[in-house]
Length: 393
Ligand code: NZQ
Ligand code: ZN
Image 1 (spheres, rainbow, N blue to C red):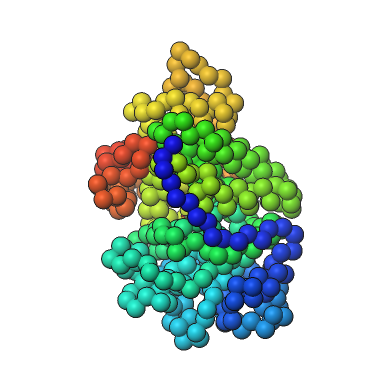
Image 2 (image 1 turned 180 degrees about the horizontal axis):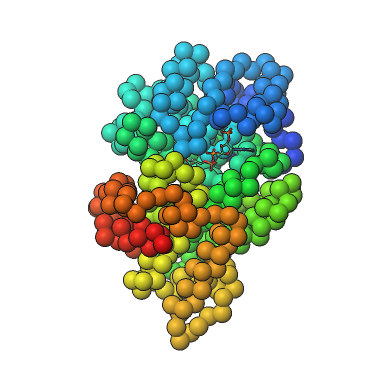
């Protein structure tokens, strides 16, 4: 097990009706003027916005709001939020929505105290040094952004989608009522489940040995999501399934299941180029890329035993000791079968991605300083292109 430092400063308030506690929780955190940040209007239609503003009013907390966050949140709205936040002197940013509202809120929170262009922080030109505290009332179980150290923003002019991982990105508060996710369209529920599984899988596929506790935690998250997603797809108002998905989403990406090992994250880097180019949902892009990434390792014979372990422990495939690669393949097929079952695309074509774009997509994938992507196997240009070709079935 590798050395690690792990600090999640997020307070989680979880369960039935907890959104009504928003005012009390923010007051306890000392918030006096809050910027409420939200998306395209689902939270207004559901009545959640009214509940949240009533809760703030009841505690005498002033608020302004900025809506319009799009899935794959855009830099232009972040600039608007920074300007509004500075003008209004806000001291807390509350995202009401999913990962996109949260990520946009995180960028505004870092951008307000930063004197230059906030994008410098995303490109690495400058390091984050201060931020306004961020919290959320979460409406979608997916990204784990409610306590992750990451925020992903898309620049419209250059079509760059870039994530910033930094401890200052971790929110201080997450209000999580699973009932709020019951209004999700089935496609978004499925995208969310796919993303949660992928977050655990990015950590599961490591070359580190003797990391049993995190292996078993990853397996618990993945198996829970498979079961709960099946229930939620059939019965969207099933509270227990929604609750399990929601908490799985949080721990899958705040590093509870990832410490002591090197995560991979190549599939995420590769997927971000699909959602940047075609503006598709992140979870749907992962459904296309992750199985292709696994097939690439099978093809190149890398750590077949770990792929086989996934097949046996998650999908209950029988271990073929004479031919572990056969077991690994059964596992990938079972994973793909599940993705199809919940309505996810598993090929570039189904996603609307074009074969002729593969060289450009490959070129755009953000490399680590050594020019490669990922940790399970470090992927060079040819490997990344091969993964796109495998996905382009
Ligand atoms: O915008 P509104 O009207 O609110 O509608 C949203 C949006 O259209 C809708 N929605 C959300 N909650 C709902 C609902 N509709 C009905 N009922 C509800 N309860 O769902 C749509 C998608 O919302 P969005 O916030 O975009 O989804 P998600 O939470 O999946 O966030 C995706 C973004 O997060 C990034 C992704 O790349 C993508 O940009 N990620 C962020 C991460 C992080 N910060 O740690 C990690 C992830 O790997 C990911 O990259
Ligand atoms: Zn993700």
